Each structure stands twice: as C-alpha cells, then as structure tokens.
Length: 503
Ligand code: ADP
Ligand code: MG
Image (cartoon, rainbow, N blue to C red; front, side, top):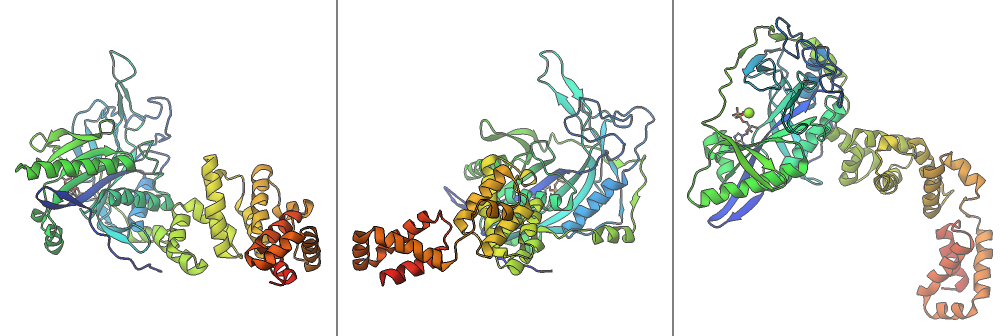
C-alpha cells in the first residue's frame, strides 16, 4: 500500500504560573452501527420515526423475550475493526451492565466488557500536509444503545421513547495518545471518515450517530515520554471524563476549558478528583456529574441469554476482501496518480462521495485541471448553494466534458466559467452548448490578427504610449478579448499584439 511519510505534531502546551503543562487525551467514541435492524431484534433503526414505533418485545424487555444477535451488525463491527487495522477476536462475549434508568427497561445494557469483538488497532490523524498523529485503538466492543427520556414536552410528566433502545453501537476506545483539542476533534473526524468509507456508521453527529466521552488529564513536559516508554499510567495526571459530546467544536472547547480548570487546581496545590463531568456549551464550562466514589458498580456478569460469539476466520477474510480503498491509501494514490498536492488530495478524499465524483471527472483527462475545477469551481459553487455533492446540478460527466474542452483548447478558462454556470442552471451537454452558442475559442490567428489590427487602427494615441511603455500592451490584449467576446486564445492574442506593436 502507498503510504505518505509524516512527522508527529507537537503536543499542545499551556503555560501556567508554575511552568508549562501538556495535555493527554483518550476518547471513547460511540458510533451507531449502520444497519436497518437493531442489535438483538428485527425492529427498525429509522431516525425520526413516531415515538415508540420501532420497538420489538425484546427491546421493551417483555418477560421471557430473548435477544437474537443480528449477524449484519457483527459484520459491521468486524469491517470497522479491519478498517482500523485492528485485531479481530474470533471469540467474544456479551455481558450485562446493570443499572436502572427509565429509558432502559431491561435494567441492564448488553455490552462486551471482558471479551470485545475487536482488539488493538490504530488510526492516523492528519494534522496538515506531512503531519499526522498515530493514535492507538485499544478495543472496539458492540453494545446496545438506551432509549430516550423526554422531559420538555409537558410541565408535569416525563415521557419515554424506546425507538433507540437496542440499536447497535460500536464503542471505540483509544489509548491516551491524543495531545491537544484540535487533535481530538481531528481524531473523531478521521474515525467518521473511515467509517463512512466503510459504510459502517453514518457519522451524523446532530442525530447522535456519533458521540464521544472525552478523557482529559494534564502533565508536565517529559512525563508523557516516561509513560510512553513504560506504559505506566502513574506518570500521567488523574483524568476527568467529559460525557456525551456530539459536536467537534464542543469537544475542543470542553478540552480547553477542562485542561485549564485542572491546571488551576494543581497550581493551587490541590488534587484532581477522578470524576465524570458534563460540558455546558452555553456557559462554556464543564461541571461535575459524579465522582469516582459515587461511580456505579455495574455488577457486570456474562449475559446468560447469549452464547459466546464465535466467528470464523474465513468469514472475516470474506469481509476483508470487500473492504474499499480507505482514505489514507486513496490520498496517497491521488498524489502519485494525478500529481496533485497532498493538501488537494486531502480535500478530495475527505468524503468518499467527493472522491468518487472527482475520479469520474478526471477519468482519462488532465487530473490536475480536473482537481482544480472540482475544488475551486464546483466545491465553491456547492458551498454557496448549500448543497452536497450528491445533489450537484452539474454531474461528474458534464464537468469532465468541460475539463476536456479546456484541455483541448476549445474554450478558454474564462468562457469555461460561463459554461459551468450555464450547465449549473440549465443542464445539457457542455460540448453541444459550446457549439450552439458559438463559445468556441478563436485560435484562428487570421481572425485574431484582424481584431488586433482594428484595435491598433482605432487607437493611435495608445499605440504611441505603448511603444514608449511596453507594459501598456496589456490594454490592447484586453480590447481584443472584449472585441472577440472573450473567445480569443489569450496566448495567441498576447503574441500577436506584441509583434504588431513591435515590442
Ligand atoms: P475506564 O475503564 O474507567 O473507562 P480506561 O482505562 O478504559 O478506563 O480508559 C478510558 C479512556 O480514558 C481511554 O480512552 C483511555 O485512553 C483514557 N485515559 C486513561 N488514562 C488517561 C489519562 N491519564 N489521561 C487521559 N486519558 C486517559
Ligand atoms: Mg470507560
């Protein structure tokens, strides 16, 4: 596989009153498995359905109902693991995590504490061209989501919606390898990108498809290196966990706030309580939810309703054989195949839909020119219209034809922009439009010469000035372009103007 070389970014440093501090961050990301049915029932996972429309008896924990594992969800977790270059555990097992909550009718969540389905993996977090952080994945386990309590629909009652109850989640646990707020957001972004390529999670953060618990601690410069060398956590500071973050921006803000809060306590001679905190985006601060002493004892035990999950290596290999080209490989290939910069390759591969669109435009054509048009014209225009690539009025085939017309010299870059606008609003075959509307570039030197002669004859005073100051030749080029409706080949015009003026 192609691999780009990279260097490791510096950790974020915060200057305190007593010296510098560094940040250490580990994330537990909850990613909803892209699947039509829930983890242990056939109920639908459709978002936005009527409350309690998608609830099977087992989701509602009716007595005597038994969970039946959804093979597709297991395959999705394996696929995700393979995409994160992780070890796949052929034997895993489900445990009950016991706690009471009104939106958890079973009284326990089925999860995988002791034997997760996916073991150690890694992800490269891009922090700019040539700079990336390697973040180790500790494990991925499968678990059920809980339902939703609704407290703001009635002044006297709370309501429970069990549609989400039992939906499959993958909990992706990282090592504390992330060293700053931007890196944490970029890490979530990279996971999301990879899972969208794999088709294993939609990654829609507004819908709660992807949420993260963010663990933050601070240490002195040099301490992290000691931890790295020994994997001994005692070199690191005590961490706090900020629960349930569902926006990249809030993740960054919460980490920033939390690090400063911890530094202030430590510099005051205090100690950090290991606690679970919540981020309040309105106030821009985290506050305590519960401390370690109040931490739940979940009384985990193996779920007696489910046999250990045994999968076969052959099945895993079959899934591996269907893995698509992933972002890092695609980016490296774009750089080498199309000769574009790593930055441009990063932009084009950010979303799997964008990458596919670009490759269709570039197919058999000038790759650099195609990249330029997709990034600058198309993306700019889509952004202005607030549209996704899937809804682009200009199809990849149409933009490809425009690129071809430019490359062949049939139209100038300027006319191409007008053509793009026409295709955007009216549709149609760009080549036909160029023919029908006479937009073809004039490369016929005879016609250009005639236009140049005309401009020279009409402007004797300008000719004298230009002879004294050759920079004024540009004015003649402009006049000729105007006279030819922008269709004259600019290079030819330049040459002919210079020759005729004797410059
Ligand atoms: P628990 O079982 O209590 O959830 P884990 O050891 O599994 O604890 O860690 C949970 C998360 O916290 C992991 O993502 C891990 O990387 C992170 N983490 C552990 N120690 C630290 C630390 N000192 N600073 C920041 N993050 C940490
Ligand atoms: Mg945890």
